[in-house]
Length: 480
Image 1 (cartoon, rainbow, N blue to C red):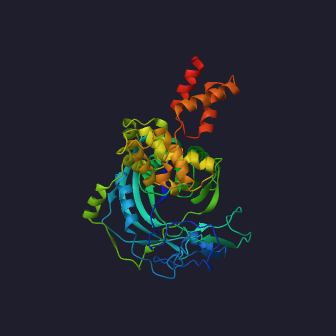
Image 2 (cartoon, rainbow, N blue to C red):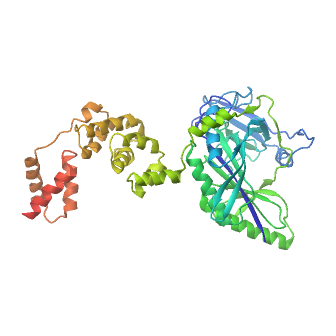
Image 3 (cartoon, helix red, strand yellow):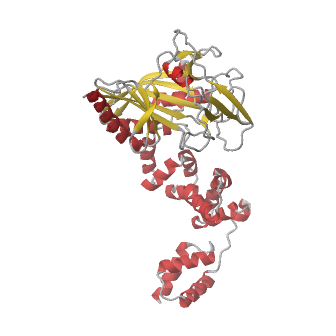
């Protein structure tokens, strides 16, 4: 049987909200206001009521919205949307160009009906940015059908099974903090022919996304898969948070559709939820075609050739390219992985101009601060050991004020509140005095390995002696 599959990937962009100036931050404190509304299914411009909207409206649910001092009247649908966020638009164009897409020069911002209460207006604003792109996979080319820039929906509140704060089945609670965060929606053509190719395509597109300014972490990317086999209606599967789920979920769906064809039952288009064990369950009917209509509060979006050319000048490199460049600069695979995952390549490049020691820079930027944060229980270490502080420490190394092995001691002092000037005043002991102390230590605790003695020495002198000096003293003593 022929398998047809396509992806829809939604990725949050790292900027302020799409149609207002509110910050894109999530809140876990008490709301400042609470609003309650109901969903009413009405006819669209075609004169038809969307089947999915009708299905949800019949449930007669109350939708409750939590607002904060970082949300405004736009999120409450009490004020018209502002002009589109130009920073988010530029990032979306970066993504489109890296996916080999054609940019759409003039586009109408649209309203897309949303029926689960996750938008206070009952619709999601979306605009076509690009189309006709592609990615190459080991199984063949997968075409990119469209790339939209749109606003994210509200965030479910609560922790129980249905993600609401109470067990009232006729009520659903949402937070307005996520509503309006800009995201790109990337849709492929149904060119994917296997579960394995589905996973590979998702990973390739994910690499492009992470090369651009997008948000990171759980919930910032959502992936849907459309699957159908010959003779079976298309099924949309939602809920892919982990790429490991792609292969088992898609294979199980193919098997489920084969069984449906044999029994000649359940042959309906529908949306299903994916679970970590590879199974799925019915969520709602597939939305119809009567769910999109023009946004009348905003003008047409024009993307000129000048804007496209300017965007190309700032086009980021793909992470694969970055990894190769970092390898040529002397970084180990472990250090490259750490640097890329922490999204600190630009900071690394800046610090490399100060001191030509790639692995030492990554230690100074990431490993040592993480170690200090863990041992000293400092959660906001990056706010203390800023790029400017690390830069100043490296300049102190280059100028000979401190040695490379001193930087951990300097960072510890700064993290505990000392000024930079006081922190770089390293107290050094006389090597003869150190040798006497170490000899005494060896005599008091005979039989330890060199590593065991090293741990005791570094703990006792706390940065007043380098690891090299300690090793030299121990080697000298053991030769005697």
